[in-house]
Image 1 (cartoon, rainbow, N blue to C red):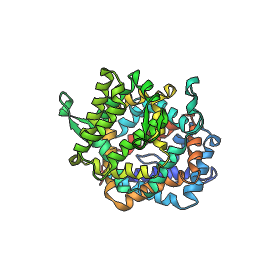
Image 2: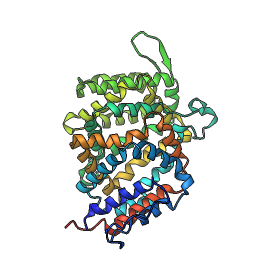
Image 3: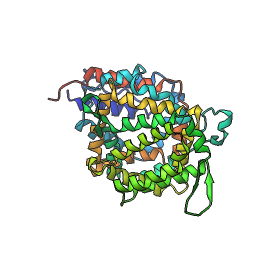
Image 4: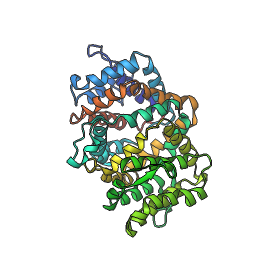
Length: 407
């Protein structure tokens, strides 16, 4: 049996979940009425839906039917999924997904991801001193959604690919190199855990133009952060410009107000960022296109405001989230999953049609007010174990047929 044939069954199985409960059972994936090595689509469907009632899933299913099935976008979604699975069969991922199902690997990040989701939809419990962040925060979501409608899709996928795969020399590391994203996450985590940072950000002062009015705190951070992003996204960006201009600005506005120990942590973060932005490493060009495109959609500095909130909200436990990122992708089964995602994103980045259609398959669930419905529906599933059900189905599939040889 072909490996991608099993995954075709999964895609069709997920599609049947958007239909009526009265629909007749689908044929097994062998096509002869008998369950083959991969099981049946009905079995996979039962694994996904066995953790929640139809009523629990209804808001999500209604949105998928309205935005994907009724508009014909579902066919595009299936076509993209099948193309990816045929080109990059997910062989060898059963252990990675099993670890996720058992609460290891990326599953360790889920409490933080749920908190971030609560931040977006306004259900995150806040401490009394965090009242400044009350209410839903859909602005950043809509900025990114708007950007994805107009950004170069190849650049988007290549940015993700380089963040997943770029390795830098590392003395003392196994193999003599380390993932850039992991090194950056560790440096950022060290700075975030410093108790001085919050107070400095709360009193940070910044003027958008020289001699102009200065704004303080969150508003000042928004202007300051986006100035740095604009500098990196500039077509004239060079390593010399980074070292002699952007780093100088960061030190002048932020670093000089930190103690020597905190300044060292800030310098370590800037060192790691500068190393990854060397043009010959292949990250800088797609990153510039992507973040530049997002910034053009973000006149009100929504994304920078979100970053400020994430740093300042103790209830979000963002410090713990950032510190947990590097171990996930550098140890155990996470390595295989990261490598597979790297191959998939490279495939998406290399094909214009596939790159565009992959983003186009997601956008209907986010545009024209659908973002609030989608995030609200997912937020409402907390505690139902739906994610566990999806992983159970994936592990079931991979365990039975993910290792089959292609004839």
